Image (tube, rainbow, N blue to C red):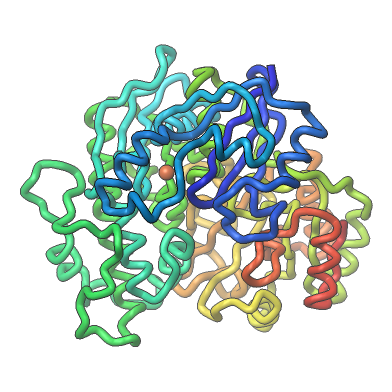
Length: 489
Ligand SMILES: [Fe+2]
């Protein structure tokens, strides 16, 4: 049976295609529509899925529309918000199949547990908001997922982090990762206790209790602070987040007794905080797309309650490889920077070698050159992609080197002076390790290593500023034309 899992009609829509229990395809809508974080499905995406795998015989939707409507009404958004009539919504895209709906946090939890290798685990889901739930803990084992803790709107760690993102003049629900990167440039101590005292109530006995509803942000908070203070706000926000994150993890350990952690929800993208999980748990799994888009997979898994053998996140649109690795290495040796768009697009927020802009990480000028191409803020770091078996020699990794295949944890560099382009202000890097396999990025790293003695490359996503990552060959050509950087397809 062909089953479609869908997360849409909110932000960053996505579609997953299953044949029985086999995951065949998953993609963000934005990659087809060209609209970054596109909240809606896209006709080209639907056509691609139908042409390759046929019509869906059932659809599993990632949340409960009626419950969401109720919460939006209670939050005062009712009349202004988009309709949650899913049958009508899908009809706009000529999708007509029986619809099953799952709870928002159940979809997150299932996406994590059933893609993990764990027989049993504590599953922690932290996001801004589902229907009502904002933080849940689950006991997962062969019997399924049992919820053992639930925190409800408006008390939300994710909503608060988004509000602080907006307070720092960034876009909430989208640019939290920039706030996280800014944190390394500020002094957390200056505002730590003020943020703790102004926002959180610690007398309730619950994990997260906010003093006020932050659904509409907190732009009026601390008006005495000026623009120059935003790096200190970012640093304190991250430090306060980490304090709460650890108290959630301690509680999850206490009530589940499991030493395996599955971490999900949009907050699982906080790669600066995530290494703390290894302080409390022996093994940690974060599904590579832990936010709502990943719930297109999770919704189906919440229904099937079956582990899938996770094969990696190369699940999207396919560009058949046409260039030899030697050509790319020669180019990197000569010009230092090139694009690579081959194979199936990654499903998730990170480019992991199939839709990447790659560069020589050595030397001081390369970071500015790549930042100029990407037109990003100068303070933002780039990530290294490295041969997995050599990663320990270069980085102090939390967990094992195989835990770092999806850029989900920062690690302290052992040689910050040698690779300044991939080292953040605080001496850390968001490492991606690549195991021995037949992927293009692995072959490329091996050839690069034998040519230079350097086992890593700088890796950032291949996208035009403000646009989603390159999806098709046509997008790759557009990138080349815009920036004059060769993209190998
Ligand atoms: Fe969510």
